[in-house]
Length: 256
Image 1 (tube, one colour):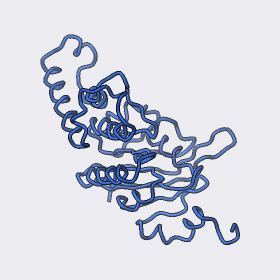
Image 2 (cartoon, helix red, strand yellow):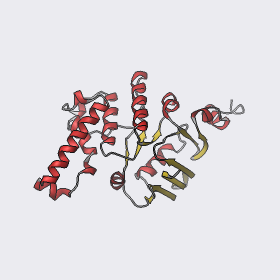
Image 3 (cartoon, helix red, strand yellow):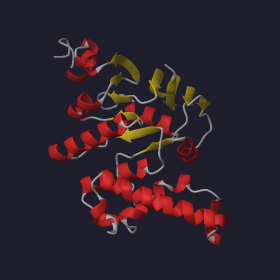
Image 4 (tube, helix red, strand yellow):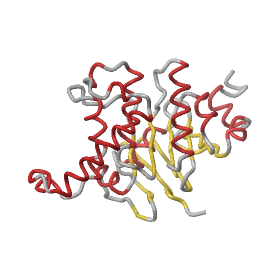
């Protein structure tokens, strides 16, 4: 099966510290893959390398067969790779709907001049983007908040807005950075159901998450990191029973 996302020999160094080392990962189209590990395992660093927030010190990131070396985040969005953020990055003074439309910007053709002139084809695409954004808000249960200022949202609502905005660019690969972080159980379960449905509808998902209940409920494959390296990879059942994973999270008998 051809991989949509392929990481080969990924390494990231910060000065003398090697935060990520020798990471290989292939994610087929349509699969929901989670990356887990204890604090300091290198998960966020790896996630940021894939997203384009930082460049790897070594190794290759390929998306849909394209080497992403030197490709910035905004250009990755146009290729079909979008992300959410662990810490909310909504624009508080814009409405909820306008925030989602920001995510659809990559789909609008013609550049700034075409928009300034309000050319007919731009108006058509803008109307389509508005309809798309409205449908996404309904999808995450936020359509009733469409015209409210995003700054007035509760934290859990902000998480849903982040998800809708990331989906607005119609990604082939959705990178989710701890979507359930800070959510109470009921809202976390709702987020899990949304993530599962997104994957079932055909979007490939790479998820970084500490909430093990959510991970075990939605992931098809799980990569476990510790000390910047992969220590296990497999189905939820395989990972749950892996001795190296148990030791990484709970400590070995010697540590105890």
